[in-house]
Length: 260
Image (cartoon, rainbow, N blue to C red; front, side):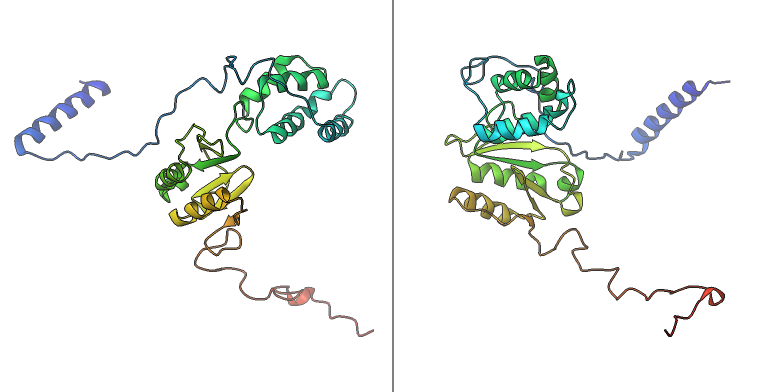
């Protein structure tokens, strides 16, 4: 008697013997994977010339007023609830969040600096280093990958003269590879700061980058002619007027409308 592991081993050896004897080709499966990215940026801070506790930062008067209004939405002792808003305001003011800005946020919210570090290192929308005037993010998750995100990324890098993870020499563009942006039905997707560009082609990407270079504002949203995320071949449902009230109602339950 053989146990299950012995049976599997014997079966595999017999398969190898048959394969070698009769020259049966083994089927090989190609696997496509995204490039491997390694780094400690998400969870480690190391002081640099441009990012250290002495890096100048202070909220503008207008932004300080906005932040104060947000803090007042929460009861005393719960100011940390405004942490996300505070970091977002800081990032929109200068384009990124240096560690000095984190310290300022901790001071205004009366929370330990560690609470701010936790947020900033967990949520990747917080840019902890300068990502250019325009942060171009290319989605490479499965739906976008199947729709050609590898080619889109290559064109973005060529058009911006910037490799993924870097900032162009003129500081105009920063290119990042990101995961699902929540617009899978409109793949492939490219984001520039807060704007989504969907159903993009190589030509679309080149036009977007060129428009940004010349100071223009590219049209965002689906670029294939779709209004939103309806089928690209046209509507297949809800193509006729909706039925009138009472449609499908049993005859015994029907009450004729009053003549008065």
